[in-house]
Length: 225
Image (cartoon, rainbow, N blue to C red; front, top):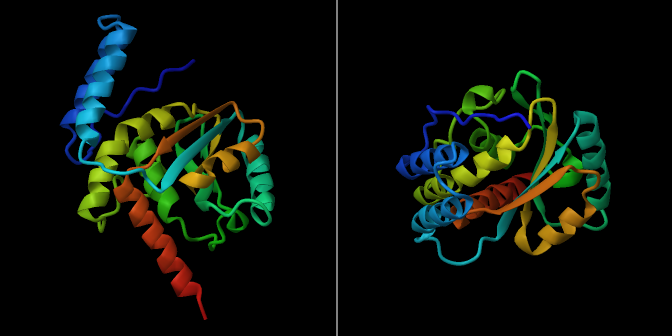
């Protein structure tokens, strides 16, 4: 499997903890740290970062990786058809395709999946900026939104390492369905995804989740007659 190095210049708010995790991962790859030591130290660092976070998040991020963009688009279309009758818990979703060059682009954004207009991508654009090195993401600015609340910024800081790890699993030439879903319906959404190679899930920090739910509410209000 091709190793995709992390971005050494990544500008993450409060990034000292992120650098510590990067250094720990490098030592693990070089054999200086055992698997048990790596798991223990990673857990310690993330506990410290997440100590202020209280309560369960209302949203999860699901990333399902596919061998080709065609496979991902097909599964995404099926998810959209099911959403009309079965799934109501998807806040935002898209297909991200990773070119052979490593560049990442939004390949599909289905209004049938999200009940939003095709031009509106609040969650997907933000998540792509964190999952992948900003220089490789086509059409979005690096980092969290400039108007993020303090709580949301702390959330991106806390979640950045795990989101980057999820992005690293999407190799050049592959594609992924990424979906932000209500936690209570995440199991159902995953059960309807088909033919993926890897499916990973991450409980989003409550600060991020509440900001995204606020965006969704604003969109709904704006569309109301």
